[in-house]
Image (cartoon, rainbow, N blue to C red; front, side, top):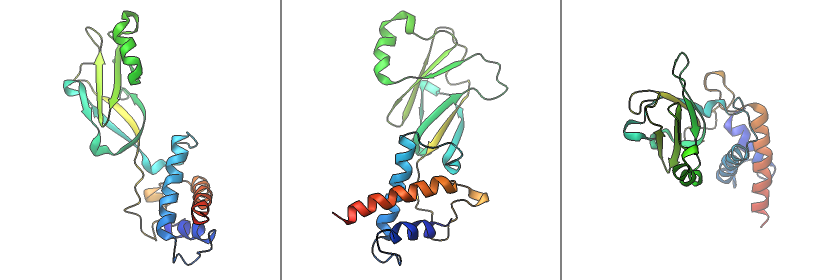
Length: 189
């Protein structure tokens, strides 16, 4: 399904099949629908395959990693690269837990733990005493969803093309339904 077909379907539902009035608004509503479904967890990784990425060289030099250039929409997981013998337990911590962790010795990381938390576009990591994961030396991998950006999409962009498979047909149809409804609500205000 091409991007033009997506936009035409959305606009047709608001009485603009020629895309004369609402094409740009349809783009915005389509992207919002994608983001909404991702935020609500109503997707599989296959649904958004073109936006699921990994960064395999997370070393946390000086205890942090800047992820700004990756344009991360949502972090999915951290794991040790396949074939790594290190027994490391990676835990993505929410910042409200950090105070409890620092206050209670039983919650603090063991030598096998790597705790990661996010402050804006910076990921920070800390380990226990004599850690297995050595900050600045050992690598872990981050799996994430890249921010969905349609700036490179043109009317002929095929969202299901094998070479750049980005969105499944079913997921695209669901997003079209949502975008059509929200655009219609906006138009009828």
